[in-house]
Length: 475
Ligand code: NAD
Image (cartoon, rainbow, N blue to C red; front, side, top):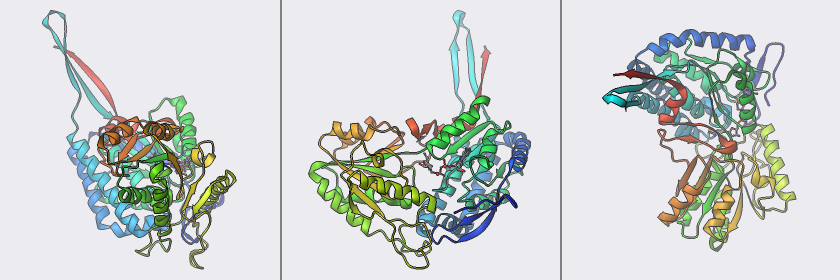
């Protein structure tokens, strides 16, 4: 667990796989946050005036440099989160590279809106919108996919000509710090990327969102924190982009390719130990194949390999912290109280002296829960899912949409029309058919309801990180 010290204002960074502290992190107080925002402000003008070609060249160099230092980033991400190195390579660090390249491409290719307006008497007016960077953007991100989530925001913000002050999670400071070195080496001017470490409330996060010099806030994290940040920013009426929690459903129809569906479900329930905002925690299965899906998913859950993150064969790491594990264990207890049948898992594994100090948990599956039960309604953010049978397509869609969240859903069916129909009926930002987590970084990403406000990705990112000035010329 991280412990803050009022004396030297630093805190320990703990390896969740072992429970051992591996580094000490400096906590930014309000003065340091102020210096970071001031440095960003100073950098904005010149960086915003830098030609797009040169700005995007910096992003491309950053992508190349991350590739050159790939294993350093993998090591940082693994040390902070305990995630298996194989995943850190294939997902976390690879996605960071893709983020820089994609947003360099998107910004380089971006055009401008213009309208020729017919006026009485045969005259015309030309309207065109000039997009300008917001200025200083606060970027606040969580611990689950530290580098992908950070670069998903930093890359478009910088490409659009903003300066950023980033606040990573106190639990995952490493890769954001390495990124500062890479961006400096890539040629980003001093002050355009600033990093402040620390916690949320009464620490770096709160100081940053409350700072009057911040022109926009992009935040990824829990819905409760999002609401808090919104209240902090509200008096200054600044743009916010919120990517928040989820309680995502998978819908498995009897006509699905069950092997494909089971492999997909295994990823969507257990990837990153269930700590992805897009992870599935509710699995609705058509009754005629319910038993087959239950058996298949239980078998796959039991074959997850928990072990040292640096072991290439490990598929499942620990949860991020003991505190988070206590939360997940609380939901396991609630599920049992509600009468759930625990199909597999349900507790803390014993992995030997090297790992028993870590925040490990067993992949867990339940049947027997209903929509009245909290484990089916609330985001747990662990390697857990409830399996619930349904009879008709309408019933499945209604169950999936019976939530305050609205981030993602996945539909498994061999009926193409049904796939489109059900996916479109989902009240979510992203719906997949016969896949999960497949992303084109140019497409809109975000959620409805408690899952967020706004979209990022491709042109949506350009819209958030810039403000248009419309120029109307009477011709
Ligand atoms: P969190 O809300 O506790 O923290 C997120 C970030 O906000 C951290 O950097 C934290 O220090 C900071 N923070 C906390 N309180 C703050 C405050 N008062 N003012 C300013 N900053 C503050 O979330 P978490 O536990 O780190 O992450 C898990 C959550 O993130 C889950 O709910 C998950 O679904 C969500 N998430 C969403 C997406 C998405 O794209 N929609 C992606 C990943 C994670």
